[in-house]
Structures are given as structure tokens and as C-alpha cells.
Image 1 (tube, rainbow, N blue to C red):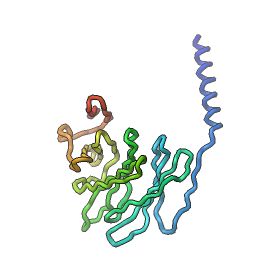
Image 2: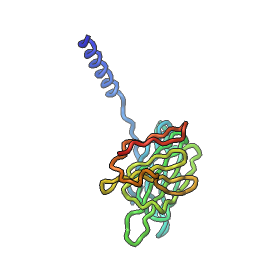
Image 3: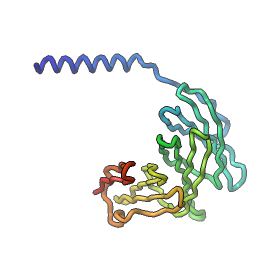
Image 4: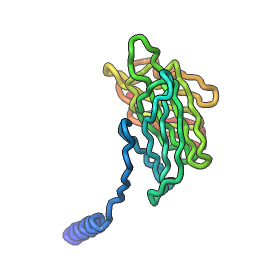
Length: 205
């Protein structure tokens, strides 16, 4: 019996390997404009993907970013612009599948004489409308986790062997940290949302 099970598993693995080898990779070629930075890409499941990059600096304190949307056949369907008050760096993204919005987190480069600001861009893939949230209070440069739950942006950072958690309310435009994060957090194992009970379940050490 053990030999039959082992043989079945081997045949299954080989069959899956054969199917994987037959799949041809999809490729998209983007013409690089002169004097621009690298493209960034975010998959958005059934909505395809978005590609964005830093465009022209219109004024000394204003920068333009271009967002392009491609469907699942990699056909370009939209081209939009977002304007930031000053130069920013892309940090990370999150796709809210339920609302059809992709969230892009940007932060200004660290400069001693300039204020450090975080920006959160919500780009809706249904209406193709964008909303820019300016989060002046968020000064943390060690963010590595972003998740959107019930109109709240959850962000986690890690620095100096300690985790910090931030909750940004998109409606109230306010930033705070949960009460349980006042103590030193050594590890954040998971963060899952219970949409029925409107709760967040955390695994924390």
C-alpha cells in the first residue's frame, strides 16, 4: 500500500511539473522614457496590473507620478497622473480586492533640514479615481507591512529589534497605535481580519 501511495505522489508531481513546463510566461515590454527612474509593478488579481513611475518635476516643490493600468491580457487601458508636493520614494503597496482599490505608500527621502512626510495613495481600479492621504505624523522609515481593513490602514515597522504598529483611519485622517503595542513587541506573527465581527486578530510575541 505504501508503494502505491508513493508511486501516485511521484506521478502527480511529474504531471504537475510537466504542466508547469508547458505554460509560457507572459511578458510585457515598456518603452523607457528619457531620464526617468525604474518602473514599479503591482499585480491586482482579476483587474490585471498597474505600472507606475516617477515622471517630471514640474516645480521645485512638486513632482509628477504616472500610473498605467493593464488588463489581464496586458493591454493598456488607462494612464493617470498623481502629483506630490515634493520628491518621494515608493515604499510598498496593498491591493484591497473587496473594494477594487490599490494602495501605494510613499515617503520623502530623509533630509535633516526637510520635514519627513508619508503619503498614502488610493487608486480605485473601477472608477479610476485617486485619493492622496498626507500622513505628517508618520515619521517611521522602517515600515515593511501594509494592510487595509474597514477603511483603516494597518502598518507595521521593525527597527532596533522592536516592532511598532500604526493604524491610520482613512475617513477621520488620524493616526494612532493600538493600546497593546505600548509594550515592547518582539515579533508580529500575523494580522487577520474578521469581517463579520469587525475585529482584527493579532498574533504577537
